[in-house]
Length: 351
Image (cartoon, rainbow, N blue to C red; front, side, top):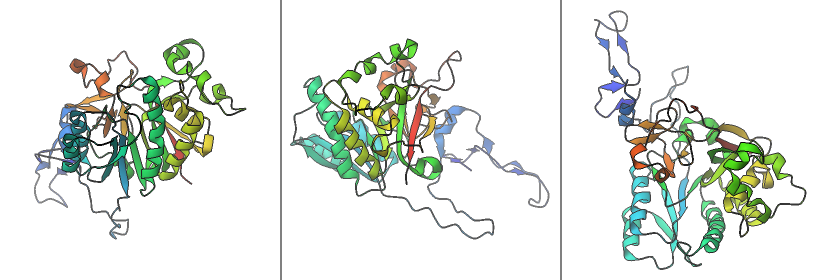
């Protein structure tokens, strides 16, 4: 059962008929939810009693050590309030931000109030300082990810400015076994890699970066990229080993003119440092998984006042929601649009 806050509706109900289990007919135990907007009011218990086929209690699930991390250099206290405020509505685990050197009292107050750790960044202030400095900072953040994730079982690294939380970001570890076993989970835009025709036009910005990337000698990137989803580097979940590999790949490939996103795409799809090799499992990206990047023609549903996945449940993390016009946010794609996007999540199995 999924019990709502008012305890009057459910996704499923007992039909109580006079017989072996009931002394008289009483009908359904709950009203059944029919309006998708009601789904956002449902309460999902953190712990349920479980029993095996012999009626023996199943050992309670032990939550792994998790960390939410983001690079928050150069932003105002208002942006901090949105990120950590929505985070703490749904997640009580560790969170750590990298902030500009000597953060002002108003930012420190937000972090203290929400029990969020921080480290100071001693490089140039990336925000508002030009494309070159910002691009370098986006590369350097992977070193930060790798360092801080070492003491945890799973780490979620997010863009800071345009990410908000609607549910437990690590809830998938219990509900989606395949994802929970993965070393790396990446989210994609609703675009595929291509070098000719319509696909090339749709990702022309990314294709223009290729000449500036440090491509390993002998690597045929067109062969390993063509037809693969365009990965969004602003939302990544992984084990410490995955962030070690990602740092190596980004430092190897990214350059002025070749972004960290390009390096992640080449690294994962081409199997560099063991990322995505042979065990890669394709899944839908936008509209599925722990992070939903809803910008750039992606797919999502309306769940009450929240962005929803295609299962009509609120997306745990929403990335790039500001790219959707306020009057349309959130919404379901019109019927003439395909139900599923071309985007997919890419998983590299651990071990």
